Amino acid sequence: MTGHDMALQGQAQGSRAAPGHGAAGNGGPGSGATGSGGGAEAAEGILRRQAVRESAARTYAHSLPIVPVRARGLTIEGADGRRYLDCLSGAGSLALGHNHPVVLEAIRGVLDSGAPLHVLDLASPVKDAFTTELFATLPAELAADARIQFCGPTAADAVEAAVKLVRTATGRSGLLAFTGADHDAALDVALDVRVTRLPYPHDLRCPFGVGGADGARLGARWTESLLDDPKGGVPAPAGMLVEPVQGEGGVLPAPDPWLRRMREITEARGIPLIADEVQTGVGRTGAFWGVDHAGVVPDVMVMSKAIGGSLPLAVLVYRSGLDVWAPGAHAGTFRGNQLAMAAGTATLAFVRQNRLAERAGALGARMLTALSGLAEVHPCIGDVRGRGLMIGVELVDPETRAAAPDLAAAVRQECLRRGLIVDLGGRHSSVVRLLPPLTLTDEQAGAVLDRLADAIPAAAARRPH
Image 1 (tube, rainbow, N blue to C red):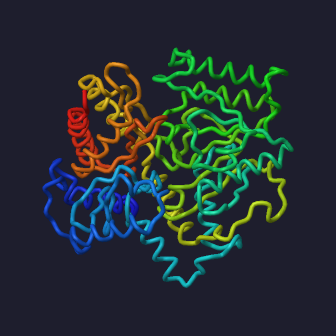
Image 2: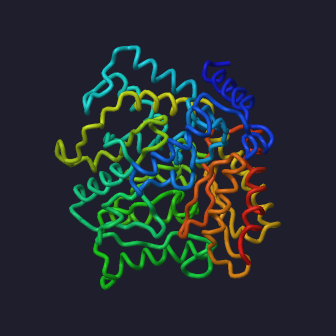
């Protein structure tokens, strides 16, 4: 057994032994354990001070009144001693869960070595190791002709860099993006009037009213027609930006034939294809990168979240022919985060060597099957969808089938009462999202499903009729 295998086994055993991973009652409303975080009174004080001091723009804190003090794998322990199963995973940034041993070891290695923690964009052994490991995971055709750009440490900065890159390389300004896309709120996409929004395949809420393969084909046909119509109002764009699975858009997987068609359409017209792999990368969807499912090789890949091993890191990888910008064309002080690069190298290697992408695909498929069975019992579940360990459950009004954001919010709160942390997304925040770590065990998956299965009817019963 290799050192990585032993670490994986130890992680799984440690997670199974941790309180809160067994019966659905552990860590629930009646859990009376008190941790060293100071107890419930201290936690309430911290939350009160946060509410007074911090901006109203904070997001998760509004719906998750938790003060984490310890974490390991899937489990978070709050200052009040309660334990939770974390299916938010740092918004998908924790591929290996909290404080995985190989990540901690990599960080300690840099700290103990005396290496600089901040190197701007200078060369370093730590950066070289990260780049080498990252390139080993890329689609082979891209890896053979790739350049990498280290961006500021946020996904939004990487998306903006990708847009700037293709605009510089093509001399064009327009951009193609898709309805429902988030792209981490990059300003170049969110607010730019030069962005043309195209229909993204959506079975439950298909803009053409048909869904399925027919809906996807109509969307592709509309895209092709719009680009080729001299009166369509869309000049030749600088690039097309697409997520292999829309996360914030409601966990919508791009059908493989549709994504291949987007590649054909862009390639035939000289339009660089940008794959936003911020949330789908590093094994999350059951393949190392989301585009791998369709066998698509994009011109640009945007990466963040999991590539930093839980620490801030964002990069672009793109074909060398696009590398035409001048030094300093997209700079940033914190492009040289050595701790994140070391943690990222350890995470990428662990996922690759232990085949965690394949594991995520198999376990995610079983979870989707179980949730689909739940939908047959509860008419308030309008759709169950996802890919790998990127799963969404859309809540609807049973009579009208309209989105039910109030019900989704109630489900999130009922989950929290049962010691389960979930996120919401989708057009109307009506999709309950599960993003557990790729180290999730079968037993832990069962506990997650049990708690969600309890929470949905409890929330539905509270809903006024």
